[in-house]
Image (cartoon, rainbow, N blue to C red; front, side, top):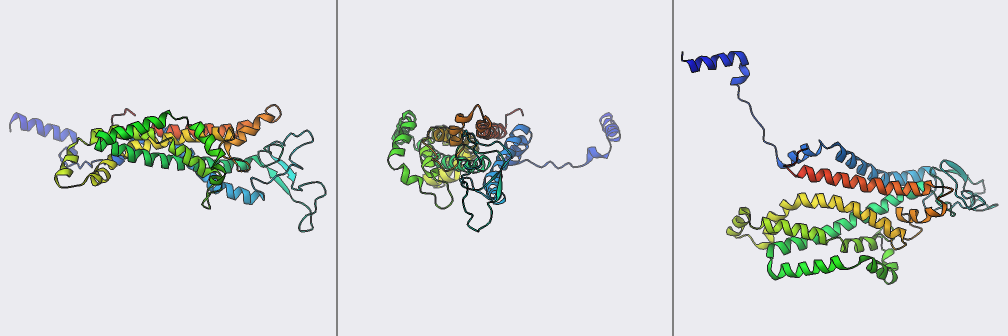
Length: 350
């Protein structure tokens, strides 16, 4: 036996039979790698869990809570929920639902009591807890709807500009720069004073009053950043070999953009969509706080914050509840977006 064979035999005896066995290694797919990197980021997962919880609370918990409590977010209890000095009652206060002293009950009995879990919102005596839940619906509808609109327009224009280049790219780039320079707050004011009241009433049977107006406004003024990001990606992708191969086999421009370029843009689209939702939640709250967004009596985190400063010395929690809701929602979306950005980057260290 040669010295090389003897060394191999010794190694085999010491290491056991596993050395000679055929070990099958399964290749990881792209999305499996993304998931493995993402689930190592516990903070991003916590943000995603909070977002799922928020959706459940807003769209499932709000109607259930209304049914259990026996009153709605717009019901007013100024007779019992506000004291003689005009100060709303605090959390976990049980009040009588009598609208005014001596009011006859429609059924001939006595007016029942109800519980205000987080107290009343102001001099009208509406339930802060229910208005927070229904305000979450409005904020999510505006943010998600405007994100879908803005990303759709931005991705479409970015792909067209990056693929065709030339005068088409120049035209879209100039339109993008004009939109970026336009003060959207002035546009909101002009819209609110003209066709805003008519648009506010368009709900399609499931949206809140004023949601469509904000979706259109915020969507129109949130497409330019996605357009510029997608354009830069497409400028690089259009020079790749797989695009040249598609041209050689006779694929048209629109088929190349739809079937070969868009699949490579999924990662930046998902990441930027997650981040822009947080910005739009803040934008909706800010516009509603200024009286340009969701109008009363429709509940919104912004208009809850607008009325809270009247009672900041006597009932400071009226600012804490909607403020905390806006803070944690934007933080959760930002953390989720950061985690997804790291997960989609195979060169990340985490």
